[in-house]
Image (cartoon, rainbow, N blue to C red):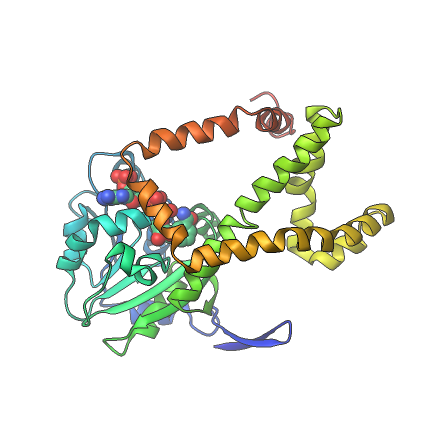
Length: 350
Ligand SMILES: NC(=O)c1ccc[n+]([C@@H]2O[C@H](COP(=O)([O-])OP(=O)(O)OC[C@H]3O[C@@H](n4cnc5c(N)ncnc54)[C@H](OP(=O)(O)O)[C@@H]3O)[C@@H](O)[C@H]2O)c1
């Protein structure tokens, strides 16, 4: 464990320097890890564990695309790929990586497969923190742990293959065996986390739901659309509006912010951009602050999770979702985006 000063606040972090992959392999030497669910997180975590020499099997309901993808990724039916129940029974660590609504629906089955001393592992605090909605209440005789990668499952895999990693938070909700923390850290390192930082199930779910609804996706999509629409209303072309709003952000500025921070960005743009952006940043901060307040309050009250569970369980969820996504895809803004992307040198002629 290392203590790092984050802007004046000292926090614990764990990297593979403090908790090595060798140590993770030792801790997990007698474990069978079942990754239940081969959606977005499942593949990244399962393949990284396998490549790191951990005994891993996949549990996935049969007959769909996810099963076929697991086979294509080298998991062998009857050997390392099983229906959910069978995988859960064989495992000593059950990584519950179904969608959060799927976790609620399959919980009675999975619960019946847990043995004393098993570890029940989550990558989100949702099911446990909102157990009044999900019904997920683990038995007393298992460890209940969390490693939550702070990125898409896709980058969990691609960053691993590139030799970097996605940072993950970790938490222990219930320590039955006395080994819960070392199991958690071992799994966190073995799935390829860049560094691990401590949280609680509650803080993980509150911050995660706020982040994805806020700056990471919801707010970002909203403010991009607002600026694009404004420019179009004032007669700017789709190409100009899209380049000024999205393309310059994703292809240039955000990468520089990732490398160097925001102050560097402000000091490495034109003085014209610098003065204006510095003046307008507090205006935008103050304008959205009340929306963020409402968002956080709705996360904490359980309103957000209730909406997720209700809508995900609707029989026509996927049909309605596709309609919503098609509307975005077919909007002028994102059709302009597709055209802009097709003009990138690497995409030309494709
Ligand atoms: N997406 C991310 O990058 C990300 C990032 C951090 C944390 N997490 C957390 O990781 C966990 C997994 O998320 P995810 O995004 O990977 O989920 P996902 O892609 O939505 O997971 C879908 C998986 O769940 C299965 N599933 C759903 N409902 C089911 C049901 N009723 N019965 C049986 N199987 C069912 C699907 O099987 P079929 O394909 O057969 O439908 C598929 O294997 C969640 O707790 C999530 O909050 C996700």
